[in-house]
Length: 114
View 1 (tube, one colour):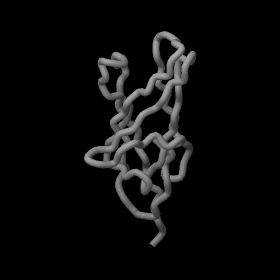
View 2: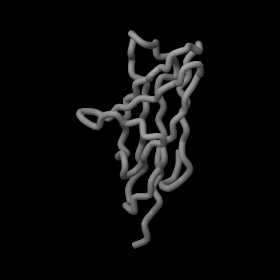
View 3: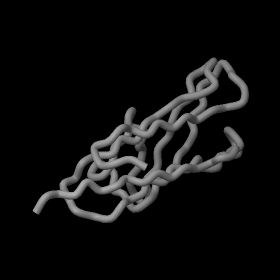
View 4: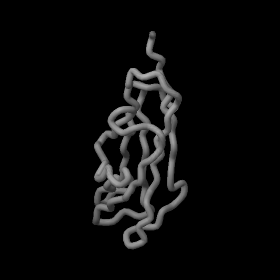
């Protein structure tokens, strides 16, 4: 878990063999936190926000992995802890999802003085 405005959480997506082609790994993003209010991504991986929040991370050609970060933002609202869920979408035509295929982290509130 991280506090609002705290350090980023970095995710790594890995493939088992390196090839001469890039691999786009599709992601489903969920949880109780709100994109661009409670958190953002670096780099921006979001490709769609409706009807659901989705994105992708590209593993470059001749590489085994790629990373992206989720950055907790300070929203100046007193609230309960919120979660960000990231899961690798199934895409049998391009890859088989390994384990773990998902991760969740919690953004803890920083109380706003009254």
